[in-house]
Length: 251
Image (cartoon, rainbow, N blue to C red; front, side):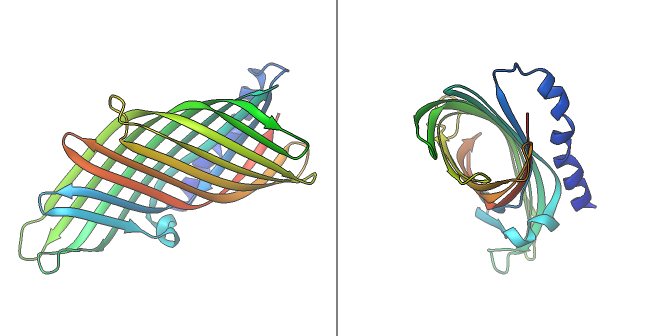
C-alpha cells in the first residue's frame, strides 16, 4: 500500500503538465519531471539519555516509506534559467538501541517537506558543455520523533519540529553526450546560520538522461542532501542519500 501511494503521488506532477504549459510564454522552454528518490537516511538528535543516531538503509527505504511526492521544473530563455524542486518524505522505522541494557529499541519517524527555487545564469557554453551559476532558497519543514523503548528504564521520547528557509548558491554543469544522452551535475550549498537558516546545508545531484522522443525522457542518478541545525536548543543533523529515477516531459 505504501508503494502504491508513492507511485500515485509522484505521478501528480505529470498530470499537471498541460496547465503549466498554458501559463508559459513561447520564449521559454520548459521541462517538468516527476521522480522517485529512495534515500538512505541518517539522523543525529540530542536526547536526555544522550545523542541518538538512527540509520535507515537505502534498500529498506521503500518499506519504511509512508508517503512521498517529488517533482521538479526547469525553464530557460536565452542565458537565463529558473529551476524549481519539491519533495515530501514521510519515513518510519525501528532499529536496535545503542544504549545496551537500558533500552532495547529506537523508533524513529522522520517527515521532511522541501520547496526550492533558483535563478541561474549561463556563464559558459560550447557545442557540448554548459555551465550555469546562480542563487536560490529552499524552504524546509521537518519533524523528527525518536522513542527509546526501555528495558530497565521508562521509555524516553524526544521530538523536533522545525521550519526554516536556507539561502543557497548553486552550480549546474550539463554535458550533451550525443543526440539522446545528457549528463547533469547539480550542486548547491548555504544556510550560513543567517537568521533561522541552517548552520550548514549542501546538496549534490548527478543524473544521466536519455531522450525517448522529442517530448519524453528518462533519467537516473544519485542525490545527497545534508542539513545541520539547532532548534529550541536541540542540535540535530540529517543526511539523505540514494538513487533517484525520473520521467520528464518537455514543452
